Image (cartoon, rainbow, N blue to C red; front, side, top):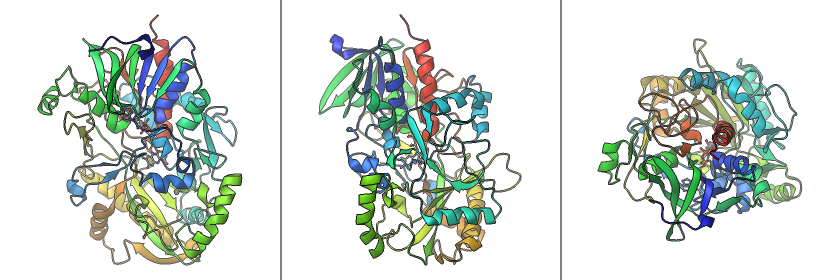
Length: 541
Ligand SMILES: Cc1cc2nc3c(=O)[nH]c(=O)nc-3n(C[C@H](O)[C@H](O)[C@H](O)COP(=O)(O)OP(=O)(O)OC[C@H]3O[C@@H](n4cnc5c(N)ncnc54)[C@H](O)[C@@H]3O)c2cc1C
């Protein structure tokens, strides 16, 4: 029930979540001065300087305030581990805490979305939105746009080891690829990144900051949405908790959930929208039976090969890097260059683990430093080394997000169900072997120390499978929990409207019916760009 609201608490559109997608919507919808827009973000403003310094990602992983710090439930196929799932909790959302790698996935990914019964989502349909979002520093082309809010750049000061990695990849037979978002996403090359002048270009910086002074846009931070307010089958507002006080805002046109793949389904369930029996069991009064909410969870599972480096050229913590750090900090502050502009994952390879794969099934992220436990293990970062992440791009395992309780401040239950489909581990096994071949290539001869993790004693396929189960982690791409479609588990239609309700859409990474074969920030931004056109076209006078 919507309480009687003052006119200043009524808006045309209320957006929940100021992340990758939410900031795009706030910008595009408020571009029409006739409409009023309210953006609610649970986290604080993005003022901390380490958000904007690319290497600050190391600190973002540990922040208690700017990170939701989720954990999965015990993962049965992963040695019973509870696995860390960081998500950004500030303006910009996960685009304020991610590794800035700019990759859209394979064109066939979007064609599959369309083939699943989602008209308007083929690659040809969505390419204009990728381009509209973008300012490609290399210039416009058939695949790239210029003049958009999201700055896409080459790394300004890549490590010399990244060049070695690319040479090594070519040596083992991968085609050199200078543009993973061009004609083909396959091959090996340096990542392009969402940075501008050596600083992170989150959606808060690219989309929101330039329009914050619009009179028709209200941004409320530290506003934790607790439920969507429904009148019969229509969403009419949002309740949120701010500084200990429950408040409400009303939506004349629409409520739009952009709280991400974990929190958007969580918020729907807290509002009584989901599987009626499960909601009832968790103590929430069911308002609208929609069994797919929280289902269809997909994520990229990632295993890391770590090698010692015999030359003092990596980003490991050493006396040399500490001494050099002062100089590099000055370079960063004065010119946006140097070690602090690294995104941590500088090199990329996209490949097929066997020639029979229809689409590339593997992605590699190369880091010119030693990584373990999401870079939270600072001791492990000490010393020179380099790492290669391997992930299976098209996992068949499916997980779910469920209510742990009716308390909106309690985290939801996350069951990733990694490796529950038997094929998934086989892709990782083949990928891991390819990673070893890349590190064994001649290009690395002058740098190669001992293999630190897993170590040469891990030899047989069974050894490697065991290592994957013990050590693999998320590479931060959960999607699919409010999937778009028209089947029994679909949550939104092809216009991203929640099935069976009016005035309510979901616009974020959760709507992807299938995980794309690449990173997920650019796709989340594209989704919001496209949604903004659909929302404006549906505006009621
Ligand atoms: C550590 C990390 C590294 C990554 N690296 C990359 C990369 O290099 N390249 C890439 O392409 N992708 C990367 N990703 C993934 C990518 O950033 C995400 O897929 C993308 O940001 C998702 O966008 P979204 O809009 O769906 O959600 P988010 O950007 O997470 O936004 C959700 C927003 O909603 C807010 N929110 C949540 N619940 C509530 C509530 N109840 N009330 C109010 N506000 C709420 C959150 O605080 C957040 O600001 C990474 C992600 C992480 C976490």
